[in-house]
Amino acid sequence: MSEIPVHPRPRRLADWINPTGSRKVHSLVDKVYKRKNLEMAWEKVKANRGSGGVDGQSLEAFAAQLDRQLDRLQSELKEDAYQPQPVRQVQIPKAGKPGEFRTLGIPTIYDRVCQQALLNRLEPIFEPVFDEANFGYRRGLSTKDAMRKVWKEIDGGREWIVDADLKDFFGSVDHEKLLTLVAQRIADGRVLRLIEAMLKAGSYGNGQLFPGERGTPQGGVVSPLLSNILLTPFDREMRRKGYQLTRYADDWVITCESATEARAVLAAATRVLEQLGVRLNSQKTRIVHVRQGFDFLGYRIVRTKRKLQLPGSMIRSKLTAVQNTTGRCWGLLKAKVLRAEPQRFQIEVPCFRWR
Image (cartoon, rainbow, N blue to C red):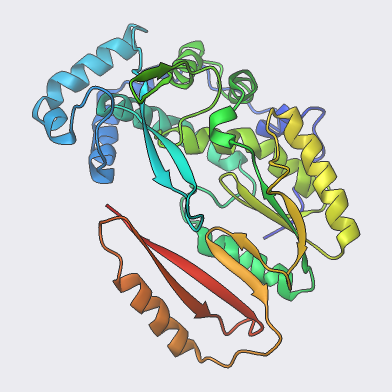
């Protein structure tokens, strides 16, 4: 992968969403509510399973009235009358952080189908714009790909790490700034209003309705794409400066050759993120040497003094044993997996069983 974007520096951060000045998409909503697209969206939602939203409707209940539900959704989108319901708040444990919880926002099945139909049309438009440093929620890319990139950079001598944490990213997204970025590629006003309605639908939890003034629900079908759109100018601008950024959703690190470079990187990142309405969590953001270790994507990476001499077959067997324990219930299983290449790193792998 090339580590420097091929495009010259845009005049504004928003220009990174359309760096070549490509023609905007003017007519899109009719493709969103096309019956075939709605049917494909339903199949995707059904395959992803999951519980219902605030209306209590299950996948089975929706399926029993499928034609009527899709007819209604198509009609509402066509007549610009669609209004999403608030998402249902659910608290889940944070991976590898005992006692800490993350708030998910679960849309209704009806709203999930609508979001998926929208995602089907938006993804091909924005995917080509996303940067090579971005590994989150993208087809063909995974946390393993992100980790390989980080390992390679550390093994090449970039042992100082900017280990950053974004402060309540999904809960604090600035709607106006996000919609401004989306509008760099989309000129269909009805689609922009549809996205805005989804963002402002609010949430419901503990018997209370919370207005959707900021944020994009973590748990919404379209939220991963929207988060990537918002952070793409950050990806591009940091790499334009020559920094080795690796990002997965709101989790990112930058590898550096010295502490001095790391301090400059952190200052630059803070400035760019503030322009996008995103703030760093100062209490959790730090500059560390790999000897001290750091956490990234659920892995603990730390340099050890002795070289590890485990054959690849043993590593594969350990990973297989861990994977075979996963079921469909919540629980946390930890296993130390020693990686042979590079041999001087020890990695703790937390694995989760899901329900």
